[in-house]
Image (cartoon, rainbow, N blue to C red; front, side):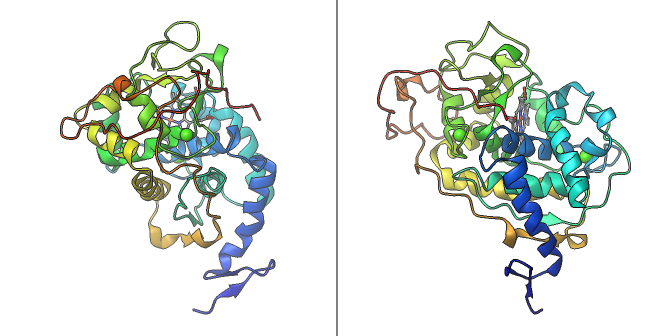
Length: 336
Ligand code: HEM
Ligand SMILES: [Ca+2]
Ligand SMILES: [Ca+2]
């Protein structure tokens, strides 16, 4: 098939992708403000919450269909979706103005958001989703206080293996909480929330010693450093025999993490769809800048002694270095 030339001079395999070039540019400038900040993070989160309303055995929604926006009156009232309303307020009028479906604004938007986060992989990205016909029922999105078995069972019901779940949790490298403890909103899950690195896998493996805010809350456990917030579910995934070795493998290998995440994200974005019904527009997704480092580091003041070894078959290596300087508080992600 001959390549088509778009209005801006870009050539693409499928002419339908031309229409998404101005959409991409407007997302970057108007929604994400050119940075891997709150709105980029929230768009990756809604990509999960919208898509996971799906079961391989049916009856749990249409997957990556934009139902989180189209049926927001229903789905945004579910407690696991607390806080998602903010990004819906941005993406809903944007999609209408651009003339694209809610399912596409979420999944295409997530891939574009990732392109602003240094270290993130390009995610194979499809467009052409139709409109949602019904809301997802409550209970499809895991809560951070759910036991590992329960989260793995829910994810398996949607078609994901334990290894794929851990790969998707690389997203918590560009993440913060607002809703569990609103007093310390925007407190991140790792010390580098603007970088898609593997710090979250290393830092969640460190011994928890403090609560960053005012004591404990449901779904929260102690974190290793001031300002950092740790989800109970992340903590348990890092220590459960079913997932600990995969968790550690990502702490030790950023390239592996990025590659497994990318594949799992594409799978997520296709829930409820046949790939052959959609159009592959990956070639208009920009490549993110590289991560500033190739290896994870111990935050200042922490060493290998602070690792809670959990993988039974491979010891955490002693080769990673400690960041220079005194322990500092992890800064909140600025509000957008
Ligand atoms: C599997 C179990 C998971 C649980 C229990 C979980 C739980 C949470 C919680 C409680 C928050 C904080 C929300 C708030 O208070 O504002 C959060 C944030 C986030 N989650 Fe997850 N999550 C899971 C999986 C995922 C997956 C699979 C993705 C994407 C692929 C994802 C992406 C994010 C992102 C990007 C944020 C940050 C949002 C922001 O900073 O605005 N999470 N998650
Ligand atoms: Ca959905
Ligand atoms: Ca990070």
